[in-house]
Image 1 (cartoon, rainbow, N blue to C red):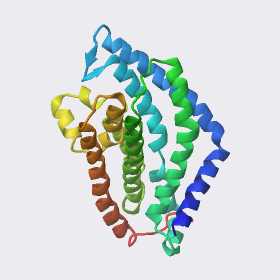
Image 2 (cartoon, rainbow, N blue to C red):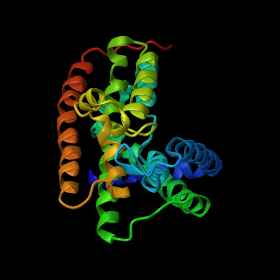
Image 3 (cartoon, one colour):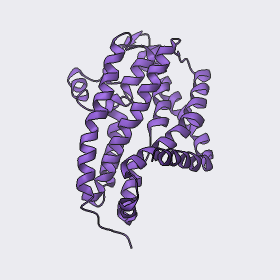
Image 4 (cartoon, rainbow, N blue to C red):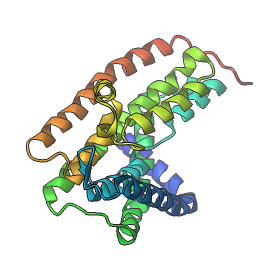
Length: 264
């Protein structure tokens, strides 16, 4: 069975490779986004050296790595699942000898690996040449960050799959998917780091899984979180990954009894 899941990863990777021009152009788009945020935050800092617990150099590095990390963990599994539920093709998944949720995870991983190798890596090199980005020199930081980035993918994919499965109950969950995307980008710290929010808002955000997707890995990469505190934020990721398995399992078990085809 493991070999079948590995093959699913390979097939999604090759499928993405067939449309790689879109992602080459995406490097330029992401570089423009990073450039816009780079100059915006430079203007916000002005003559100040420290805001929200970050120096101006940490902030510019955080912006760059966060957007390039997003290229890896981002996927449209929620939309794929919703479409399969609407046209009834999800019914065929029930009779196949594999787990539908794991298959979706593997498809997302194949897409993420493609983006990481052919999007994030070259994109980060280009951004480093264009803007003042301080990369970590400690190999341990790179290893921990890459591990945390993988868990960012897992947590984001769990949220996407949960959102997609709501199509079993709502029939049309387009609004929920849009709301989820805004929530992930905003509350994960991609647009504004969590430490820049008011204290009460930051406290509420710590009760959500979103910071574990972007803010925590980015804080480790930039050195805002260092030493033994790194293991604490990594434990937070592990906690949310384990916790999200529960609603995912319960929702999938309940959804299997509610399938009806909307398409022809």
